[in-house]
Length: 230
Image 1 (cartoon, rainbow, N blue to C red):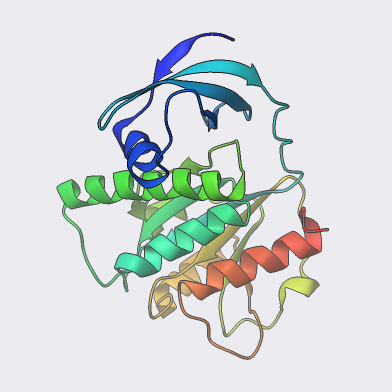
Image 2 (tube, rainbow, N blue to C red):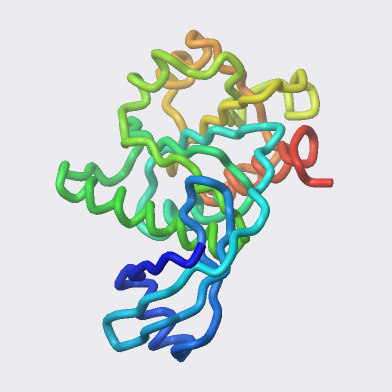
C-alpha cells in the first residue's frame, strides 16, 4: 500500500471530465488479475493526467463454482457489443468470438485487431459497472471449425431444432461451454460439426431469440440452475 500509479487516459477522461473528480477524492481501482478492489486517493488531476495513491485493498472476489465459457458467432456492430457486455455482467469466465458461415461482415486482420481492443474495453467497463474484480478472458477470434476441434468436455450449443431444454441437461461440474451462433444461426453443416464434436444441442423454448438476446437468456438460466443466482 502507499504506491502511486498514473491512470490510463480513458479513465482520466471519465473521472475528470465526466465525474468532475478532484485531488483528494477517493476512488476504487481493480487490476482484473488478483480479484481485489483497491481504495485509492487522487493525488494529481488534470485534463489529460491523473495520479492516485493506493490506500488499502479489499477482500478478493470469490471464484465462481461454475465457470461459463461463451463461444459466440461474431455479429454486426452494437449487437456483438451488447452480447459481450451483458455476458460479462451475468458472470461468464471467458469469451471466444467465432467466425462462422453466417457471420455477415468479414473483417480484415487490421479491423479485427481493432475490434478485439474495442471488445476488451467493453469487458473492462462491464466489470466496473457490475462490481466484478476478475477480468474475463477474451480469446483471439477464430473460425468455428477450428474451435470445434477442441471444445470443452461439456459444451452446450443453442439449437432451435434441439429436442431437449436446459432443465434436461445433467448438472455441469466446474466448466461449461456455451456455443451460440451469429445472426441467422448456425448452418446445417455447422450444426452437424458441433454434434460430431460432442456438443449438446439445447433450445430455450418455443421462441427464436436474436443473437444478442440468446446469450443473456441462456447465461441467466444457467446461473439460476447451476450457478450463483440464489
